[in-house]
Amino acid sequence: MKLDRILPFARRLLEKSVAAGDIAVDATMGNGHDTLFLAELVGDSGKVFSFDIQQAALIETEKKLTEHTLNDRATLSLRGHEHIKDIIPESYYGKLTAAVFNLGYLPGGDKSIVTTATTTISAIEQLLDIMAPEGIIVMVIYHGHPEGMLEKDELLSYVESINQKDAHVLQYRFMNQANNPPFIVAIEKR
Ligand code: SAM
Image (tube, rainbow, N blue to C red; front, side, top):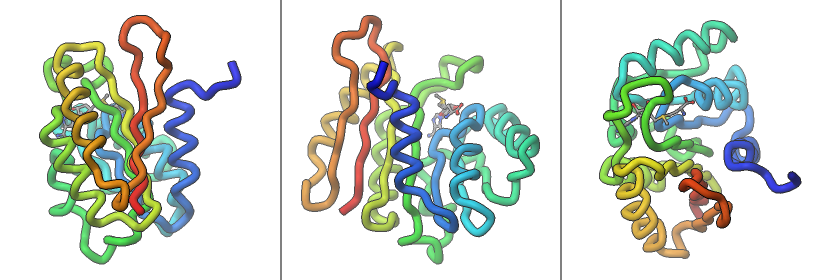
């Protein structure tokens, strides 16, 4: 297949936006795959700020970073992404070039702990405020579970309402796949 599948497409967008020395955000740390990926992109002089509300996610992410000796490049917070502005120092505002959200529940974890539209939207608003122009927010939306369906609907109506003078909003979605496959919404700050 020549078309990028969902996760590779998300990674391509992140690769395009993040250069060495940049600041990046993993808004939903989970098992740490995206934190590790971003830590590789930001290089020695950059920084990744990662968020999750589950201790299990922090432990797993810390383990992955240790395996690759990249711990110095990431700050892991046991806080919701709705606290982004409380955690990221103001000196980094304007240097933040990418953020990623993998919505839903922790794979292999407690399926009752899921992301919700209210905190996701609050985090997007904060990011749009502090990101560099052309900074990209990549969201992978999983809507195969009931709460995910609700989150998807609320999120789509929110992102559709973002003024086109403030950001470009893209949806990347396979339209003929069964079982509510995940899709991407990407927001590029103008
Ligand atoms: N990107 C992750 C990876 O590489 O494994 C997968 C993320 S998983 C699909 C979603 C994560 O979001 C869960 O670990 C869950 O605990 C977390 N989460 C739920 N609400 C959150 C919030 N308000 N802020 C940050 N993380 C949250």
